Image 1 (cartoon, rainbow, N blue to C red):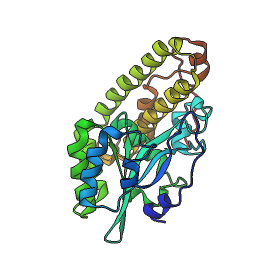
Image 2: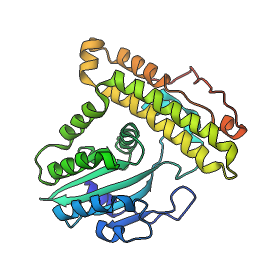
Image 3: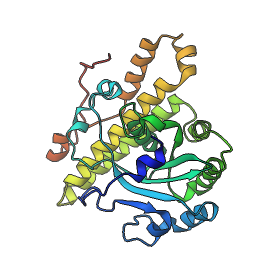
Image 4: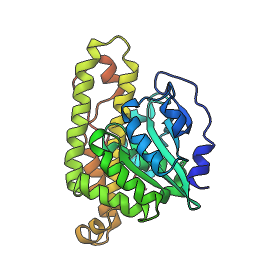
Length: 282
């Protein structure tokens, strides 16, 4: 099924602490809706609508983490499977039909690395978008990214470039290469953990932040692992075509991402805990 039809069929999700602004409908109506979490980007939305006034938006879509997925077993951040349903959501997906071709842009509101993690979770073979991964672009929404968003949207809407080519352009622009991505991911994860450890003692309701922290770290680890495995020149030039060796290095890169357990966050511990070494690879 094409991405447009998949998203159009997404049903209402009951409000929770994690996704209390779910919306799925015309972008024009979303702009004026009480579910609009991003009124600061209404000007951007209007500019997109000037190009195509039939855009839809799916906001705060919950993402399920499949423990049976091989990549999830290998990165093996077991606490990610303990967080509450709805802790991981896609902030925004803008989708449309253009010349009988379905397209969608998935947005993170935090980082490009996490946008890629969301994309990888949703486009696994058994996931919601597994059959239409070539119709979905992953980007990060923010004032500094508006020019890139408009350019990518125009290229997709006008069928000027394949979605995969547009994604690769942004990969190189924001991440340079997988080694740079890993270094940036380590810094990003550490900043997320530092914020959680500093903030949790100051707030009464801790659950949302704890679950969000675990979820974000999982997305970062997922992003690093899968991106490494998808980089063909790494396979050929660094690992001489040996997929097993590539998998070992991808796992090692993901392991460098700092983590902390769910229980440690609830205890208020500042000690990060190492991952288990018994990883299923096959």
